[in-house]
Length: 338
Length: 205
Ligand SMILES: Cc1cc2nc3c(=O)[nH]c(=O)nc-3n(C[C@H](O)[C@H](O)[C@H](O)COP(=O)(O)OP(=O)(O)OC[C@H]3O[C@@H](n4cnc5c(N)ncnc54)[C@H](O)[C@@H]3O)c2cc1C
Ligand code: SF4
Ligand code: FES
Ligand code: FES
Image (cartoon, rainbow over all chains, first blue to last red; front, side, top):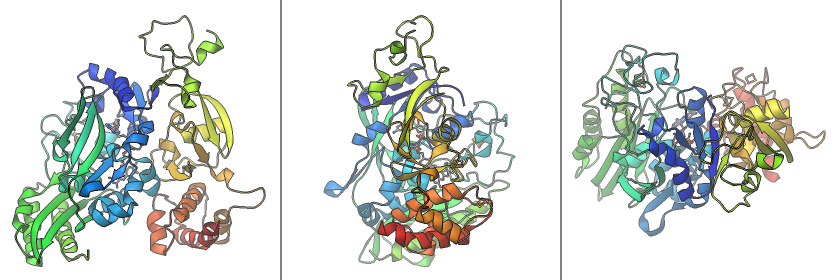
């Protein structure tokens, strides 16, 4: 790990001030010389691997006193960015009203990691692509723009089948982001010039020609909260992985339905483990609305969700797996008791 | 440079006071010990110099002078001499370094020692009361829940938290909520049995 200066901040304006040096350069936030430290479960790991090299680490954990509330007042949901994964997953109101959120968090990482990791850090976790994490590989456009992509003809079993480019096929590894994108969440961002809100779907950026730029955050900006309007008691998060627990998704689905008199009036489908960014399957959703659930419908929706998928040498199995996960998640959401 | 200046940053924030939560200002660069003539006010603190930190481990406060990069795990093992917590992967993947921080299980290899200042760290060495082992330690022995023992301190810390969190109600629950602790000797069935055995006694208090 390279040496850095550690700073601890106790209020948001001080955090923004401390991160201001990151704004001075034009790097994307992931390359900024000053990095906020939340749970550290991505940042410290990648600093040890020499993949991330901040010169200043700004510990924002004291902001938890104002930025970690879980609030369900008025029929909407607001989650502070410094809430810990474990606390949100264990919250009975979240479990009842947003099972897709509770389960996306409960099925991620391990209990110890969930105690440390924050929601803000979670959505900004970096890919687990081996060629990205191991700097002895020379070719990784995300780590070293213009150097190529070792995964294209490497062992790409864990890599993405949706949203890829010829520059990068790394999977976005997180689970919680799929729940957020499915529920049309909003991200509250606090920066030098105040607070702005954007749809969660606009936070992450597909790799295209610049895989090193992963989000639309500006350097020095902080995520302060996530909000969701309405309740989604009929929602599920289903995760298929190589181990039964404590493993990233090979394929996952976040599904939320609103069913009135047996007819599906609103449907949300998001996919994890399959795409380069949190992924909403809007074409698939369009097939569901106004329909009654049956297994044939689930199959059509699953096919539509993966229609644009592109398999590579070692990951083509993910397309068939992804369809089964979508179909089963739809079945679970449609038949769950609420 | 005098001792007094050592604990005061260029910008005038007092480091120790700040960390004790007493200072009014909200930003504190934990600068290295100043050496040589005072640089100009805008100069970044030299990150290559050590910093002071007080860690509270098993009830004792320890003042350490460390590299800012030091994790809680390395502080425990290399600076305090508590080698019970083990380093398996050093990347948050195996759970061998699990300790309790403010009574919650945490991965000490991904926690900076500086970030743990002011918090209560409990390691496996802090469990026994004199000669009397903690019920979870006793259960691990009685259930033969280890072979090489390398993962065991992390398993025990995690298991205590697992019970207190209310996740020891069934074998499936225990397996799920102990999945962050890898055992390369695969003592898993015995670990589950140990957690089951100790749970009622721990919950009784
Ligand atoms: C072994 C292992 C297994 C895992 N398994 C899973 C899994 O199955 N599913 C899953 O979803 N995740 C998994 N994870 C990833 C884990 O969930 C993330 O590392 C964690 O959520 C990151 O949160 P954090 O608070 O620790 O972030 P940090 O590491 O503190 O921060 C991550 C990044 O975000 C920046 N940042 C943090 N907070 C903010 C903020 N509020 N505003 C702006 N920038 C910010 C930091 O500067 C850093 O660049 C796993 C991790 C490990 C180590
Ligand atoms: S897939 Fe992306 S992250 Fe992985 S090696 Fe290629 S460019 Fe790097
Ligand atoms: S040594 Fe910390 S998790 Fe492996
Ligand atoms: S007892 Fe050997 S690793 Fe668990």
